[in-house]
Image: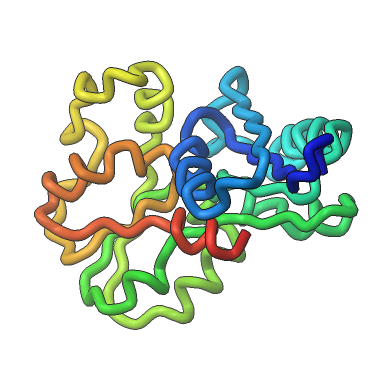
Length: 205
């Protein structure tokens, strides 16, 4: 807690994408003090090894520990799927993660999942995939996270068609908090609803 008796939560992401989740958390938890650690200097995380991700995550968790955080929120799907078990074992405060919202999109029969390559290759994502019925296409738009970081806040400069596969899904899961910035544009591109895990993660916190 801080000097005013408020609970403190550290929010960690590979860059600015976690700000979309932070906004949802602040809406639900207005009395909580949040510390945000955006590792823009090392973004994107999608192509990094598990060992690299764990090292970068520990650096953020150490900062949260030093400021007396009561909990930590991993706003990065890539880090959650690769490292959250280790972080929960190593740090004394609760660590909450985020994951692709496949359950929220359960009614879609022809689903597109957009996420980093590291997320899609993880055992945690494989578990989520096994629970799902219906056709699922997974795609890692390798340059999209970097494009969002580079162009923010002028995201209209990004050519969506240059980053997305030419499919006709009936639903799209945004498995990276960065992609939530483009939720409306991606929904219009496919003419389909988009699902993200921000609301569910904030409720879990």
